[in-house]
Length: 150
Image (cartoon, rainbow, N blue to C red; front, side, top):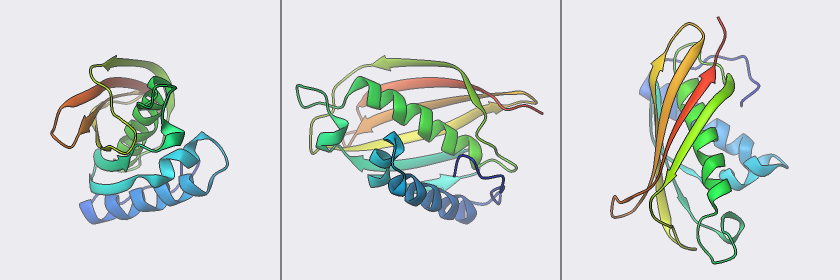
């Protein structure tokens, strides 16, 4: 999905289909992305996406809460998916990421991941992501800047 040169159609239906294909490919990979294969698409539009995921043992730290490093992986990957739902969207390369950890998610808890493209310029894209619990409390807030070339 992240190495594909195919462009997504700029429609909500095209975005949802594209996101589902990406998550399927991630789930079948052998690396860290495999852990994101448990995500479900809630919504997708050009420039944004919303996913849900139940925190599994593979996503947790030693005290049974969502691992901070895995949270960073979520922000990185899901903002990249949001970027790729833009017309002609390619994954780009990370330039900067910033995360604020506000509250923990526990093993077995369902989380909602909302990512959107704030601005896509000629060479840079500015993205943001919030990981929330089912009550709507923000657990992690992330910003991500990517170099996308021209």
